[in-house]
Structures are given as C-alpha cells and as structure tokens.
Length: 439
Image 1 (cartoon, rainbow, N blue to C red):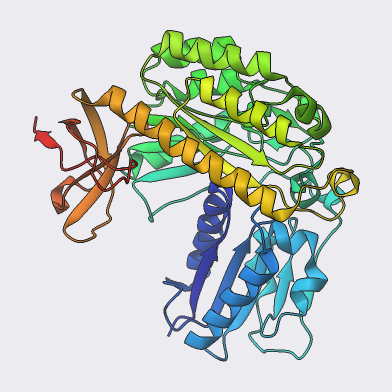
Image 2: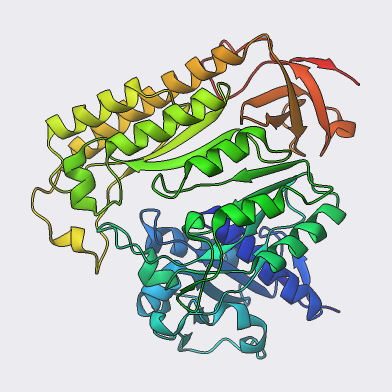
C-alpha cells in the first residue's frame, strides 16, 4: 500500500505553485497525495515569512496534522523555515526543517519515517540558493500559478524575502513557454504568472539574459490558453510598452496588481522603494486611458516606522483620488534582520489597527465603485469548482467576482453573462445571480 502525503500552504501564489510541484515529486515517488484533513503518513507545511504570527500559525497546523495522524512525519519548508529553522525545530512534533535550497530535494531527505527525539535541519546559507526551480500549480483550481522568477535583489527596509529566497533569478523563456503548453494541453484556461519580483524576469547567474516584456510577447502566442494574468508587478518595472501590449493582446487580461506600500514620498524613501508617487499616478492613468475597464489592485502597508498621522492621511487621500479597484492592506510588523526594525518613530499597535481599518473601508468603497462601472455590461466569466449553498463563483477577465446558481457543467468553462446586480448584503466582492447568455 502506498504511503500517503498531505500538504498545507501558507502565503503567496508562488508558494502554491511550489507546493504543487513538490506534490508531483511525491506522486512520482509512489506516494498518494491526500487532503490535509486525511490520515497521512507525511505532512508537508509550506510556510510564509510575510504574514504575521508565522510561529503561532505553524504550531497550530502541526497540532492539527498530529490530531489526524499522531505518528505522522512532519516536515516544514518555505520562507519561515529558511529564516528561523531553530525556532521551528522547537515546535513539538516537527521532524524535519528544510531551507530554500533543500525544499525541492524533499523526497530524498524523507527516506526514513522514524520520528526522532531531535528535529533534523537541512538549511544552507541563503547565499548558496541560486538555482531556479520551475514550478506550477495543478489540479486544485481552474487557473494555474506559473512561477517564472524567484528571489529579489531589491533591499526594501521592511522585507525579509531576499533573506528567505535569495537573489533574483529566472527561468528561460523557452522553458516557460514549454510549461505553458503543458498547462494548455491539460485543459486549464487561465495562467497566473508568479514570482517574487516578476518584472525583474530575465536574470540568470546575476546576468541579464531576457526582459519580462519579451516573455509577455512570447506567452501571448501560446495556443490553448484563454487568459494570462500578471499577479503583481513593481510600478517601476511596469513599463509603458508592457501596458500598451496588454491593451491589445490576445491573452493578457486587463488586471494589474501594483504594490504601492505608501502614498507618502517620505515613507517611500524610508522604505527604500524605487519610485515615488508621481510615477505611480502615471502608471495608473496610462492603464485606465488604454483600458478603461481594467481592474487595478494595490498593496499598501500601514504603521511603518516614522509614519505620522499626517503621513497616513497623505496616503489615504492619495489612494482615494486614484482610479484603482481594491486594496490589499498590510499592517507593518517588525521583522528580525531588517533595517526597519532599528528605525525610530515606532507606531503604536492601536494606531496601526485604526489605520488598517480605515483603508479596509476605503478598499470596499473602491471595489464597489469599480463594480458599479461594470453593471449592465456583458462579460466572459471563468467558473470555478466551488459549491456553497447552491451557488458557484467565477471571475471576469478584469477580476470581477460573479455568483450564479450552481451548475457542474459550468466548471472550468467560459461563459458570457450580463453583470446585473451587486448583492444587497454589502458583500461587494460578489455579483448576484447573473443572467447566463449561453452561446
């Protein structure tokens, strides 16, 4: 009887793509991949260092795994595992911790399922993590997260990602195209390009070999994929040529997620971001000029050291005036070994929470305003496999979330519908049962 392995993923789309790839390695080694709630022989937890309370979350998930299977072998991988292996090794029940360079060799490390009294750690210095390992998610969604880039050479003062994932490095265009063709052949309709800093695509062995724009042009020619979505791209790397190309492309959708982090030039300087407000406004205006229905998502951090009340209001007003569609709000939290942790002007937790709440309300307002511009329009929706209380959901190309009555024939199908109403309960992320215009 085959051994069973289960996975739990914390964090970003990049982590999901890598978990899926590790899952395929286990399948090829003769394991059965089962749900995390099942009784498994091995549990792999892929961690994140960006989200708060990584230690607390990790402990909770380990405890949950051992509840299902008390004798299971528990392995922790991912960014938190690279940054704090000793801390993780002290969590009761953890058998192995693998760093960034080791996680894709996990099958060879787990040859013996004996639970030892002392946790095994394989964790190379991050400076030795310079290989790119291709990854994409598969089998769990109607869209695939395709990893094209890893690591980061930027030095934002709040960020641990360079410490957790190493230097910026990329796949080749040829390899990405071959993977996209594999994905297309599997019947998946949408690819989401992922990485730590995907606009920096093209670095191999610290040398510039390609440009992200060249990858975009090549992917647009891949037959069989209906949609390609850019997950997140730095404003200074989102060039006019990329925006202009997406506006007239066959497959790239009018949806951009562009980190801002602060609307105050003073705070952007303290964060060591590589742009200022003026450039961000220019990017948003260019997108909206060429693609009026484009959806634009924004990352923003509140409570960064030195952020006064006036600085925050500056950010709030700046975002309020921008023609964007929604926010991802992050409350600043201190990270070991980052310059920001030594900075003066620490913002009290209560103020961080208040600012976060204000921006969450602003995000709801922005999303509703964007959705209202889409009402009455026909839009092509890709439906997902979820089924809750007789309804299912899907997304338009410009990332409007649509709700219709459940019909299994619609799963992973593209249908044109009329966007007819926003739900009255205030959940502005879902449109009510829209009329299906069956073709």
